[in-house]
Image (cartoon, rainbow, N blue to C red; front, side):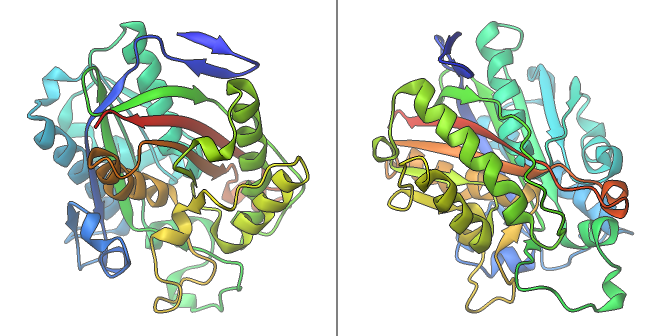
Length: 335
């Protein structure tokens, strides 16, 4: 691989996405992208004893879907890169235990799908891996319990709040697939002092703006060169702030931009306030909706820009601001 500009990597032997799997819950199945999921569940516990175990099962099912589509066995995969929102990434460790694939845990909050996909691509392109899995998940109930208030509390949600997706996405990376991972950029941590844990979009928008601006500058491209630029889960509030941030630098993203947090649910019919969030949001939209469209040739060239709010319950309780990060991947269809 070679470096373009300041921070972008361009793969000379481009890794590809061989297969992918997306699973979701009841609310996700009822949304506009419900038909793009490989599997959905009507029971939020997935018949497990806790929401945390249910989330672990989501990852397990997403990996199983990706492996099945590729006709691959776990022993044919060299690495699995995974993470989630829960403390010590327990959804990943417990969910992926039975596969016995060499495991590299990742944490990028809601940017984890882009982070795992970028690291998997580096491993494959460098020859360190023939095949690598990238997977992440989130669950509304487990995230609420850890980061906000117990569900039994029944608190009023702020208009800026987003709904954590109960979903998981997985991509199998190797050589010879229909979608090429051409370039990638690892984001820098951005912190503009947003402290409101009910306004994740505002916290993450500066990171999305910085990473997209840097990627376009490094590659000498403009928004119109892409069929779509998809951010992770900025929601309604964060998307508007993104337009403002980039607009100040002379970049108009509106004609080609869509946000996974606004695609996953129907905000008119489903009470999700500012949109979707959580690791499973961008992961399931990418591994369900976007990659299907690329395989059909409907999308030729896109940027996938997953965003993450790098907070913890402890940092919020101590009154710290919420830093954000955004990683960018350029995907090109070979169909």
